[in-house]
Length: 177
Image 1 (cartoon, rainbow, N blue to C red):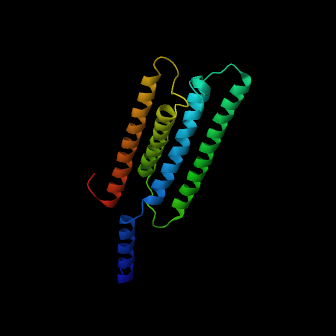
Image 2 (cartoon, rainbow, N blue to C red):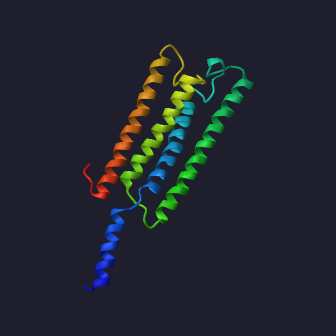
Image 3 (spheres, rainbow, N blue to C red):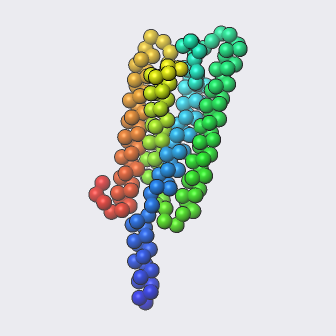
């Protein structure tokens, strides 16, 4: 084996060891925000009909059709925003795949997706459920419990996803988990 081939192989190994996790991590975070927001909009707003993005006067099921029209429009705008964020995440993922020094790991991507999902839920929880009170997870006498459970789930997703992503990065760099 020639010296040039040995040097190239060593350089390649070092490049893998020092691969940049940021492009894939950032793509996963943005994708997680978009997918998490879409899941909220589709499952909680449309399928279960527990709440809408806005609930005028605390009423998530207004009987006035003109008010309901605005409520549904707000849901649509929220879903559109989450769809656009998901598209941005896909562009970032494509770019990460094209970068020679970018780390590529399904575990890192999954962890980042979970963190992003938890992050959008945390924002929704803190801003919409507690600060602005534009809606609650599920209106009714137990709404405080649903809001708290949603908040706790958000933190669990972020911590768990962070653990998964960090362990992928540590494994790739040869550091102890």
